[in-house]
Length: 118
Image (cartoon, rainbow, N blue to C red; front, top):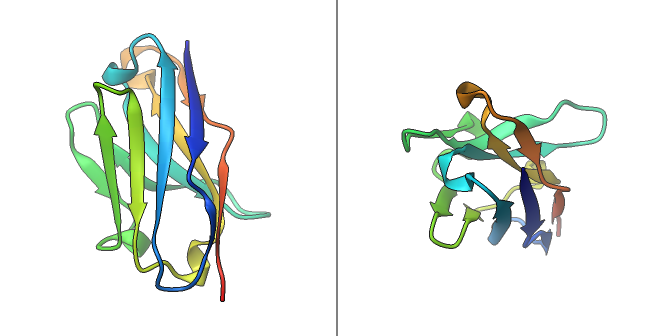
C-alpha cells in the first residue's frame, strides 16, 4: 500500500513558476514508476510527466522545456518544477505511483489545484 500527498499548488501569474511535491509513504515506493497527471473540468486526466522504472523520463509535448520531473528516493518524494507557466496549465495536478507493470497496484494522490491567471 502506497499513500501519496501532493502540495505546492496555488495561484501564479503567467510566466511564473511553481514547484509541486508529492510525499509518499508505504512500502516499495522507490520501485514504482511515478508521474504527474492533470485534469480540467469535463476532461480526462492526462499525463504531464513521468519517470519509468528504468529512470527514463517522458513529458507531454505541451510542457517540454518548461517542466522538470524529479524524484528523491531517499526522502520518498516526487517533484514537478513548473516554469514559464501559461493559463492553459491551469488544472488539478495529481501524483501517481504505478506498479502495474510489476503486478502491483496503481495509486493516486488527492490532487492539488494550480491556477495560472493575471
